[in-house]
Image 1 (spheres, rainbow, N blue to C red):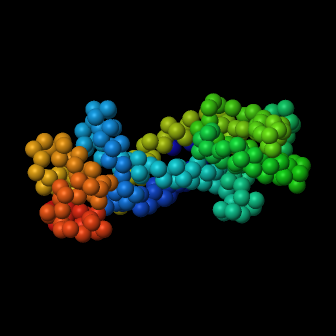
Image 2: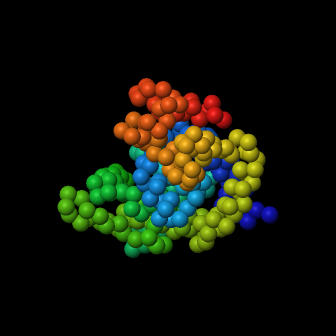
Length: 295
C-alpha cells in the first residue's frame, strides 16, 4: 500500500530509477587501469591500511568507493531537485532557464512567510549541504535573490539545504562586500521545512525517507545486470604481487601498489623490469597489459 499522498508510487519509482541511471559510467566496473586513472597515492593507502588495521581487500574497496562517491553528489542533487516536478504547484525549470532557479513554487492561495505575510511565488536555490558555498558564492547567490525581489514584489527566495545544520526556516544573513546583509523574504530553509511548505504536511520529508530504501532496493533489482559493477582491482593487484618474488603476500601487494604510483622511480622499476622490459615511459601501460595476460 502506497502511503505518500503528495507523489504517486509510479512517479516516485520512476524518479528513483532515473537517479540511479544518472550514476552512469560511475557504475562501470573498476579494473587496475581505471583504478589508477589519476595515479593513486601509494603512501596514503599504506598508512590507511596499517593505521585502520584493514585488509587489502577493504582498502582497495574503500578507494574504489571514494572514487565513485566523489562524483555522485551531483546525482543526489538531481534526486533532491527533480522530485519537485511531481509535486503540485512546483515547477523545475530546465537547466539555465527561467533565471536559473532550481525549483519555482507557486500557490494562488498564498504562501505564508514567517514575519513577512503571504507571497504567491517562491524561487529556490538548492544546495546539497550547508557548507558547500564559500563566501563569494554565498554573496553572489544573495545578490541574485535580491534582484529577483526587485523585479517581483510578490515573491520570496529560499536557499534550501538538503543537509542543513538543523530544521529551520529563518532569515538568511550573509556577507556581501564585507557587509552583513539580510532580508525577511530571503530565507535559509532546511529540506524538511520546504517539503512541509509545498505539501502542507509537516512530516512529508520523513514520510519520503521511510519509503525510499525499499523503493531503491526494488529499482536496483529491476535494473539488475545493468548497474552491478564487478571490480577486478584486488585480483589484478594479487596477480602483480605474485610475480614480485617477495615471501610476504602483504608486502608483495604493497609493492604492487607502489608500482602504480612509483613505477618509474629509482629502485621501484627494477622489481618488475625483468618481466616487462626496459621501456620506462610505457611502464604503467605495460603493467596494465601484464596483469591482463596473467589473468
